[in-house]
Amino acid sequence: MKRLYYFLLTILRIIKYLLSDAKRYANILIEILKVKPRSVIEVGVYKGKRSLEIIQAAKIFNDKIEFYGFDLFEMIEDKIIKNELSKKPLSKKQIYRKLSSYCDVKLYKGYSNKTLPKLKNKKIDFIFIDGGHKVSTIKSDWKYCFKFVKQNTVIIFDDYYLDDKLLIKKYGCNKIVNSISSKNFTKKLLPMTDSFWHQGKNLKIKIFYLKSN
Image 1: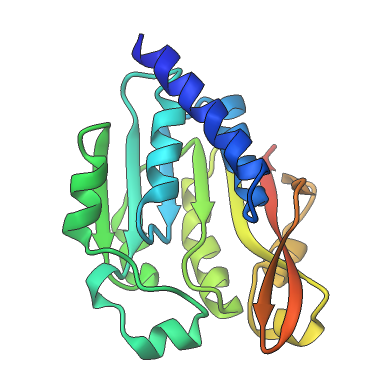
Image 2: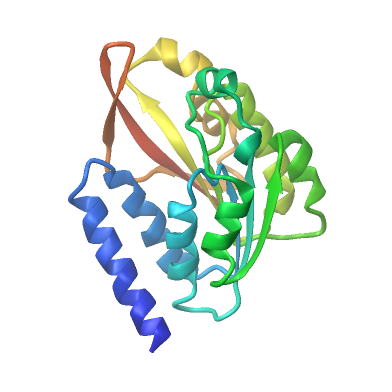
């Protein structure tokens, strides 16, 4: 019965996303339904909303899920939020309380270039990279997440920006995903485009998909 409940809940969430101004997030749940992951990494947990949705969708197929979340949590400062175009997350304790009743949760607090290397000897089914938004930060996150990739690992990058070449020079995953070889990964922009305001401009944002070959 729980699996049916999580399935119906996930379908409802997909529909709600498709009817909202955050349509692109429907892609994440759709991919979870395809991948059926037993293990998940999320870089940039924020308030745990996506984390919980991913975990519950994964539990449609597997009773035991391993979830590894990375964020600054309460360590974050206003300067970092501004420099990374980020938002203030919940505390590590709050996120643990929110997620731990659903699966095996391990949370890592600190800068991801320091915390990602602490996770050793793991190969992961599904990786969601949505931490800091500077190109240098995303490049670092991908560098360290790459060691968790096995055959058929799916990696989702948020923040693929359209329309603004100046923004793309400093922020977003565009440069990183465009530099990844298509020989080793299936690459594509996922459907659904959202809008956001940046410095008086209405810009477009999508989600980028990788799957290791």
